[in-house]
Length: 204
Image (cartoon, rainbow, N blue to C red):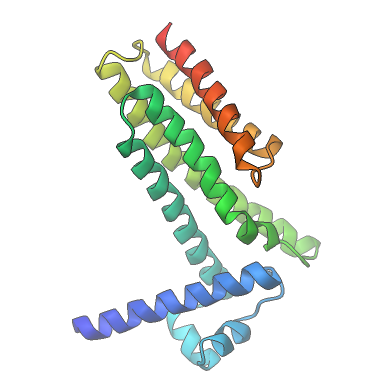
């Protein structure tokens, strides 16, 4: 396959996923059909099937982009911060900030689903959640290990490190549920407090 053909196909993939994301966000996952996506990109349904076999496959690809964007933003923020405390703050704050930015997309997905569709959707959400947890755990583990190697954090065993990562990520999910992410001015001091509490435990 030539580079030009490959680039053309990559652009078509990007166009399909961008259009599908917009449709999912406006109408919900249940109401959008392959015909809707094909019509929105000006192609026939048979042409769409050349790139994606089903709406579920398109949705998975859209969500994977959302996950990659979130992890990339968190990684950049951590890399740009200096010192363990500021890196933790960047990790926590960027996670909540990206979730706020993407909230409109995820909020509409289950609109109009019947019981069977909702059950299937919940299983898909678990798969995506587990993927996010694994990737965030890796990033947080690297952050903790670097802090220990630099003497900024106390030494921990592998089992303690694993447990700590679970506690931190679970706590962050709890904060996300309780906070009104639209009012981000109120989020920042909460993250600052959470960071200070975490750092106290990590240094003593």
